[in-house]
Length: 132
Image: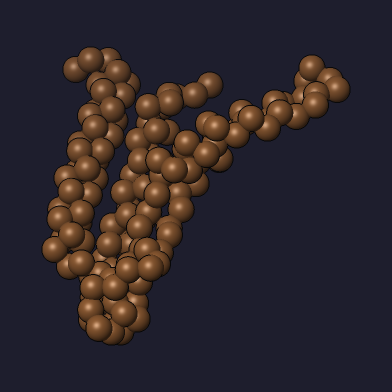
């Protein structure tokens, strides 16, 4: 029995994504003056698209075998470096204004997820208490 449902799981994974993105942005900001440092980004959309585009099918010899692609652990997030660009003479490519903007955007996203998660748990609490 799944007490919390898929919404809580989706919110949990989204919070993981927002947390990793926040760490990556903070790392970029901390290294804004480091010579040769290349900014990193967290990608989810590309990973999701690659997973959806993969037409890999497994040969199932028994109906009880699980089909490939049915697991929920396939949507890992990827941290990639932005190679090939440079904003300073030191080879660094961190755009501090862009990083600060993405940090503020990610904080709003994270807070919205936390508010929604809190609402779900408040609803469960009301149900457990009998609606009082």
